[in-house]
Image (tube, rainbow, N blue to C red):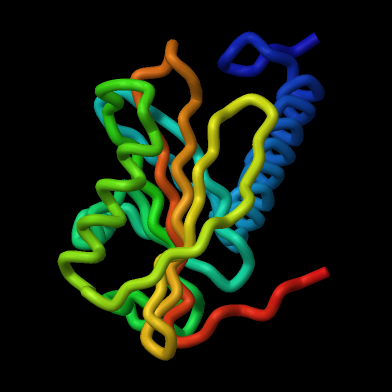
Length: 176
């Protein structure tokens, strides 16, 4: 029996090389597949939180420009310019100072009233069996409709989540 320079016989050396070639080609093919996939998960984090977000079809997530919209992450509908508030979903995680979530929502409403004196509000029904959810529509007919929801994950959690979606000039039709 002859040995090669590495102490492996020629038949075994041939098998080892074939295995390595197979592994390299397999990794290369897998890498090509990952390179063509659209990554639709965003990792969003801050001082007291971390969450992932799956982008809905035809929406693009953005953490880089979210601060311009006072948010941790924003989602823009396809075709909308990045600076536009039309077709925009804003998600923000705030530190909680107490469990009075309705006061937080009311403060947002006062802020909008100061900016838009003719603003109107309408209650929305949003329910979750585990978390307190409060929701309203903030709107100026013909100018914008913004759907705002506050989610309080409970007294043991130090954060409050707010999500808003702006549809701009019209109120979307109700779906059955």
